[in-house]
Image (tube, rainbow, N blue to C red):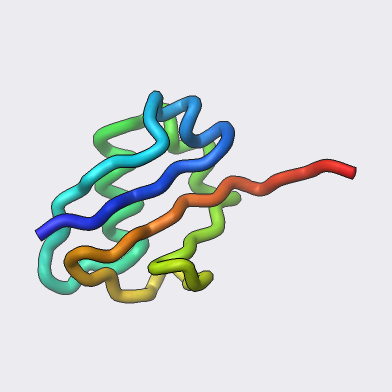
Amino acid sequence: MEITVLLFASVAEAAGARRLQLPIEHGDTVATVRDRLLAERPALARFAPNLLYALDEEYVDTAAPVHAGATLALIPPVSGG
């Protein structure tokens, strides 16, 4: 069972990819998937405190359950004028 993780802007640059496939386990949440990703790609840890998460194109918090085949987007804060 896998999910697709989409990475944007500076997070994608730090990861060296805009899209990843990650295995999931029964009972996974956004937080457990994020933590597994950070363990695999420690360069992303600096972004973790400020990330927003969207699961299947809807904003969610880190307690949201993740199901097989889902798409999880990690969205860094943006600024501009």
